[in-house]
Length: 220
Image (cartoon, rainbow, N blue to C red):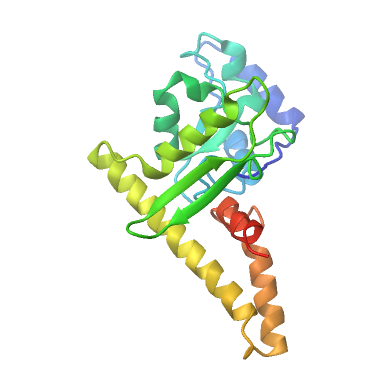
């Protein structure tokens, strides 16, 4: 997870307010989807897969339409992939997790993200900080652990295996850039190009940014 800023849009809020008054109003409006893609950098806010088929998730469940305000609340609409959405819906404790749009929730710093490649690909997710009298960080860790590693059904096994392979490929490319940058044989002009590519990988526009940040955190 990385921090995202939700754009305040009076136009979107008015459109959702109109839909809320309808008998069969819809929150998945084109204007809503476009803005969510922009705000979340076209990534799932939970696993950080990029440029995938997306769904709109209610960060706080609206209980099958019973809470009409939550259902049409722009601040409550998040961009998520099908894999993560299914896992988050499965347990009620995942209703209380870190909010990546809340600047007070340090979603990258408070949780360590690491891919262990041996003996098989496994994602290690560890809480590095705990809020007093709060379990939202541990709930988030548990959710992420399931998202990246759960294999109790053939479908989930396939999803998590593919997800870990994508993370491995992305981190391998990033690690190769770091190796090239510190190579004694690299030319100065090539080093500058390499540095710019490293910076791009560390921006939230890239896939699996939190993992890359932790590679930097753990290396002097």
